[in-house]
Length: 90
Image 1 (cartoon, rainbow, N blue to C red):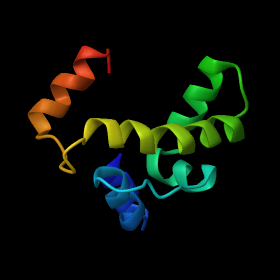
Image 2: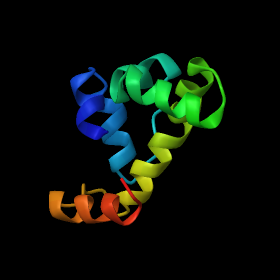
Image 3: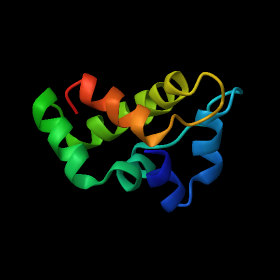
Image 4: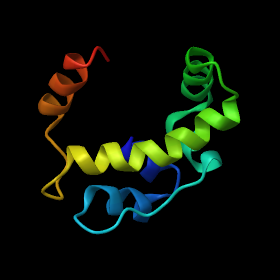
């Protein structure tokens, strides 16, 4: 997700999520660019909410998740991240 944010021109926001300071906010529309419309639609369908609501939820949750995965202000190694995703059924 950090690379998706960076690719969407939101590097400063993504860096704030990884860093040890406050998390910069993003909008639901910006989150659509980060995770993609398919992901937003899939989440919306699973949760029984609109795509707009799902994007807004992701905009609130994703920065907190990234922040929680990077307590030392560093992204985990790819192998560590893959293991974490696999652990949670990703």
